[in-house]
Structures are given as structure tokens and as C-alpha cells.
Image 1: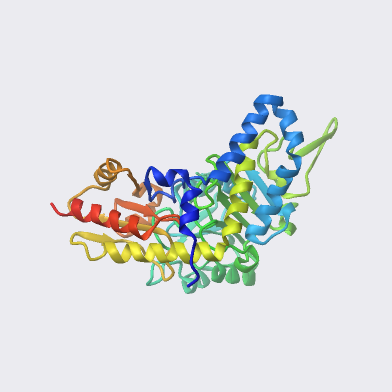
Image 2: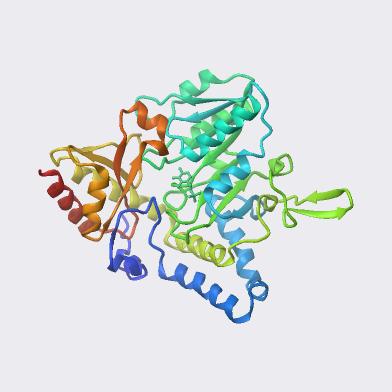
Length: 394
Ligand SMILES: *Cc1c(COP(=O)(O)O)cnc(C)c1O
């Protein structure tokens, strides 16, 4: 196994000196170069003016599209930058023209915001939403998906890695089924981009959304959407403005022909520059290297937590990522989070209302979520596990 320069990763992560951060699935600690790029743009805005700052940073801002395209293996005209992953996903989903009887097939581990959108569209159009059952490992069952297909299936919409655990859904196998059947395929890759290699060609998806603040380690309030070239001009965004379209005559406008038809004119430029820097930064480390290390740390953490009496690790799936979820008998996750915070240890709590189908099916209401990133160390995991052992020992 090639050595990962954790020392350098930590030197470039100022927050790692202050906190034991295991909330990377919530919002990762920004590395210094990302922080500097973001702040520098705000300073430029303050010094020379917001419009003028954009003009001066034109090259950097355009580079953002190349960076995102390199990260997920598409072309720059297939990328739209928006304010977060949810809006990126919404921009794609709400542009699909559903009608009564259309079926939306989704995953059990689907994220609440997506599912709420399915319900809204179902209520308004008469489309129906159905969850594809899990297989014995807890991931989307390819066999079940095949059995559900018919001419009414309009969309397959899958969360790659859920907010609530180590599960990695088999998105490429699902993509193969979607392509064979000629069905639109949308992937929520919010937790996977920046954590593991993402190749939209291999996944075979038509649309994919992600965020800046999680495994990419970018600023909050940033995200982007991928839309496959051939599809862009078939999808009409729900919102159009003078950036997404041009007003050409008294009764006509023309939409952009690239994915930027899904963007807004006004945007957080400092955030966009920060996200671009975060993407380059991730690419510099090498996504394969990042993935190898995150997977290993996740595995090590599960291995350390499992033997602690009263602790049950809850992650499912064949391939498991850096998100580790567990419960401790007799201690509420919120209480664990609170006690850990007193020791400068950050975790979050996975709640049923975020991934309701999955947690209800498993009879769970809440879990502790400890999500590792490559700059975490084995020593930190040992300290964390000792803290959990102490909390569990009542
Ligand atoms: C966090 C998360 C989102 C939402 O991301 P935002 O950037 O907050 O919009 C969407 N899907 C999944 C699976 C997530 O974990």
C-alpha cells in the first residue's frame, strides 16, 4: 500500500489541530488552499468591486468547469454550478416532464429532500414513486430493479452513498440496466464525490449532483450538476433567468445550449472559486489514493468499535465507505454527540426523518454517524474508540 502523506494533509488542514473531526459527511474541514482562495476572492470584491473581481478572475472561474469535468469524467459544457447539491438535484429532477402513471424508481436509502420532491411531483402529476427493494447486503437489488421495469418507468433515481451509513450502492450496475432499458437515470452523488472515484461514463447516468462542503472539502453553499450532453437541450429548467436564457425579442427567449441553463446569474463567486480549488486539491491528492485511505480508515474504525460491549455498528453494503454509523445500548446518539463535543470530538446524528424508508425498515430511529476523511489518523480513531468505550460502559 503506497504511503499517504497524512502529515502534510494535517499541516494543510488548520482545523485538525483543534478538533477530532469525524463529521466529514456533514461538512469537512477546509484545507488551507481552499480557505485562502475563497477569502482572497472576497477581499478582491471588497477592494475593487464585485463585478470587477469577476472580470479579473475570469480564467479561474472558467477553470472551475474543467476541474469538475476532470473530476467526474465529462466535458465542461455538461457542468452547472449551483448553490448546493439539493438545488443541483432539483434542477435536474424538476425539469423532467412527468405525467400521470409515470413511475419513479428509487432506492431505500433515499435522501429526504429527494423523496419529498418525488412526493410533490407525484401529487401534482399523478406519477408514482416506488422504492427498489434492497438485496441481502442492504444495497439496491439489481434483480429486483429488473423485475420492476416496464414501459411506464420514466426515471431511475438513486442515492449513491446515503447520508446514513457506509453503504455504496452499485450505481454502475444500475446504470447498465437503465441504459439497456433506455430509462432516464439520475444519481445523487453528494456523499461520494471527493471520497471515491466517480466516472459518469462508467456509471452510465444522465444526471448527477453533488455538493462542495462534504468529501470535496469545499466551502458550504456550493454544489454542481452534471447533465449528459445529448439530454441538455431536451430538459427545460423550471427556473430561467437572463443567464440561463437570452431575451431576444418581445415574445421570445433562447435557452443556453450547455448545462449552464441550470445555473443562476447571481452566484457566490468566492464559493465557486473555493470549490474549484477544492476539486483541484482533491485531484492533486489523487482520488484513488483518497478512496484507498478513507476506505481503510472506515474499516479500521468499524473494527475498533464492533468489539465494544453495547456498541452495534449499523453499516450495510458490500463495499463500505468512510461513513460509519453505530448505536450504543442505553445511550442516546444526541447524548453521545454532546459528550464527545466536550472532548473536541465532532460527530453527527443520523435521524430517521433523513432516510425514512431505510431506517424504518431496519427499526432504527437514530444512530451516531462518525465519518472519516484522509486527514484523520489511526491515533484519532483509537482515541475516539476509547471515548465511545467509556460512554458505553455505564
Ligand atoms: C447532504 C446530502 C444532500 C444535500 O446536500 P446539500 O449540499 O446540503 O444540498 C443530498 N443528498 C445526500 C445523500 C446527502 O447526504
